[in-house]
Image 1 (cartoon, one colour):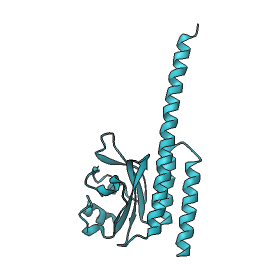
Image 2 (cartoon, rainbow, N blue to C red):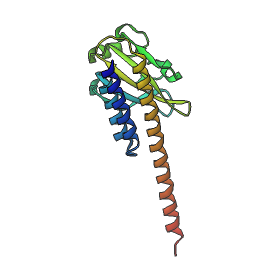
Image 3 (cartoon, rainbow, N blue to C red):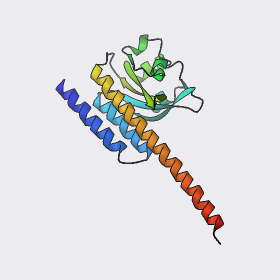
Length: 184
């Protein structure tokens, strides 16, 4: 157990350092999903954000999953582990026998036996989810749920920081154009 706790600590350190190192959202999220998968010995990890209509989850970053699996079809927010989008972690110990799984055939083809889904929340509003996918059917420990929850929280902070930075940059560019327009 001590080995797993050490991996979890290192992953949490790496994620926090990454969030604090850059405002490049793609880079941050890519590093986060890799760290989460490696720390939990998972086959893969994905981070999905709700679309503008809050109808579908869109893959924003992934690690260890095939392009074919990622393109399997729309991931409907109300069908694919919907409880996670209500703010609750969802653990699926056997993907092949759980009605909450939207694409069980594709999951089996990808070699996924179990998955853990944690909501991504920004100021108590769910904006997406992070999932780890394991090859073996398994139950997830409380420590694994806590680690992935902390990673999800840091991911939400990274996304919020990036969005705020983009908004400020755009406002700055508008001000620059306006000032240029008014100069003699």
